[in-house]
Length: 174
View 1 (cartoon, rainbow, N blue to C red):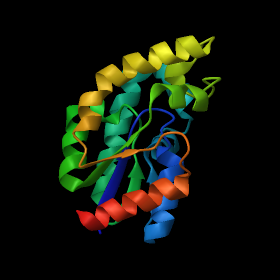
View 2 (view 1 turned 90 degrees about the vertical axis):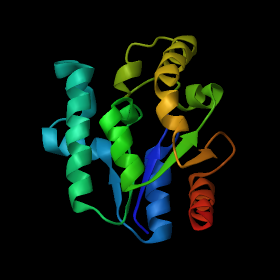
View 3 (view 1 turned 90 degrees about the horizontal axis):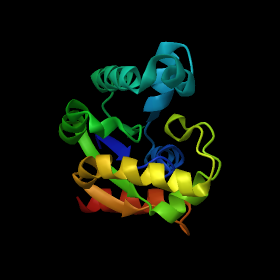
């Protein structure tokens, strides 16, 4: 089976779909953000507040290398910006199957309406501001996302179980 990496924007459902997919496939699920928080001894928001995004990206790269060194069969939910680091993009593409969970901005804004617990959306006072920030992030990240082996619609109207089933079907076609 190997490693299946889930990527996509904040709010695309990587964690919930990843857990569902792992359960369907009978393999472990790894949430890279949880790995980072555990290793750092603090949550992601605190890392961003205290040390900034650049430090977080370094911790993210370290966590990815650590997980890859000990993992053979798993579903791994990457952070939304993990592929902005070229080494991370290369590592995921050669170590397993990279799956892009694509959701349109309307869906993402609806899912992230209050911006809570999302460090790069902290302080966004309105859905318009959340949309603006997400659009900027998507512009930076889309090259990495579009290089995925599989792209799948994870937008409104599909349950995590349905999305996980669709990924499993695509994996068998590969």
